[in-house]
Amino acid sequence: MATKSKFQAIRGTRDLLPPDTALWHHVEETAHAVFGTFGFGEIRPPIFEPTELFARAVGGDTDIVSKEMYTFVVGDFDRLVAWREFVSNTNKIRDLDELDIYERSLSYLHRFAQESVKNGHLPDDPQIRAALATVQKTMSFAGTALNEGRRLNGLTDPDQLDREVEEAAIAAASIRPGEEISLRPEATASVCRAYIEHNMQQLPQPQKLYYIGPMFRRERPQKGRYRQFYQIGAEVLGGVDAPAIDAEVIEMVMTFFDRLKLPGVHLEINSIGHAADNCRRGYVALLKSELEKVKDKLGADSQRRIETNPLRVLDSKLEHEQPIIATLPKIADHLCDDCKTHYAAVKHELELRGVFYKENWRLVRGLDYYMRTTFEITAQGLGSQNAVCGGGRYDGLVELLGGPPTKGIGFAIGEDRLILSLQEAKDAAQAAGKQPPFIYVAWMGANAYATAVRATKDLRNAGIRVELPPTEQKFGKALERASKLGAQYALILGDNEVAEGTWTLKTLADGTQQKFTEPQLLEFLAKLK
Ligand code: HAM
Image (cartoon, rainbow, N blue to C red; front, side):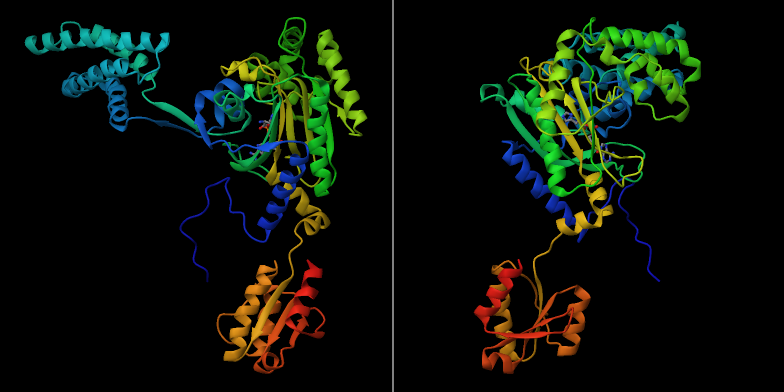
């Protein structure tokens, strides 16, 4: 009986194993090739970034940032420990027996507060400065009170100390004595950060960049939804916001899917306008007031979203909310003239490129940075998690992150879902996973072995997969193992074959045999590749 392994991959993560990884390679190689023909270059940003980058770009109220990020605090370890101890001790202090702990915490805190301000370990913003001032005020009050209490064998006003300590505890808890970093939940924010950091606005515009790599979101795992998943994404940054750019970016993803023979590809587009009173802001206000009227009929999530982000109500998949949502005002009727013109032109440009699309006025996307064009692509065989790609325009994001005013548009493909869909459609997966010819070398005898080693090297150099058994096997055993491994051919090398200089190649599927000299064999195999 197999014993249960002690360690297992963490929930929502998984090992990608051969032979599946061959399909992953094929997909990624196709991305490099197709994106290259559209003039995109690869960028590899780091896997973690300051939490603030994602909070600012994706939005603090989004599910991704508020619930799903893997976040760590990093900083001077002693400082962190001291700070944590202080925060927890200030909560315990009401009991006067713990005067000692309190006093120790106070001295840590005193050092901490002074040093942090001096060496700039805490960001110099008004909130933090106010919190530190409160803590320092409490410290001096408490110091006096404690001295006095010790002298008198009891505090004169324990209630006031309580109140002061509580205020300080709240202030202390609001201070982050270190840097918060998060595993990236997406990469658009990183690409924009890199664009600014490397002054890419001084290079020819627009910059066209793509990336392939893991992302992390703490979502509930299910088919097609993982906590570590992979994205293939692309971003166009800088230059103009011509509708042809939106259309070309979409055309590129569709070309990529087409090249992979992804089945049942379906593109939906929308425009969510821009943040102005005569455009999206006006629409959202109207939507909100309409939603208030039907609030009682909506589920808890949608009710909450009326306050936090009314647009996201349109995203709801809840059955009973569908007829209600269908009656809500549509954004297309409330776009400003510029956004309306832009959207019409994007559709025209898509038609020019022969890209089929369907409009979906409810396509709002779950990240805050979008404006104007948004799109999503679904594919076959994925169940409820059927979005294989999402993207849109995000003019202004670079500026929001501290860079110059910059246009931007991009997308990200869920690679795990793309692979799942290809695997469901076996033909596509087979075509994708085409393997090089695979030969098993069945050798017997010392002379034959030396030739087998040399021949193996030559064949591998010619790009052929070769399995050379490390110890001698009887021919029968060797052929059995060759079939088990899935080899197409067995190269039979006994001392006779080596002496004659003609080798036998056995096709395992039908048992036929052909005789070749070594150059003939290489020529024959080259044709199979
Ligand atoms: P997103 O819609 O959050 O957009 O993600 C894009 C795609 O990543 C989804 O359509 C899905 O295929 C895949 N995906 C997301 N979460 C998971 C998960 N937990 N498991 C498996 N696959 C997942 C973005 O990330 C934007 N940064 C796209 C973008 C780039 N917009 C402009 N530029």
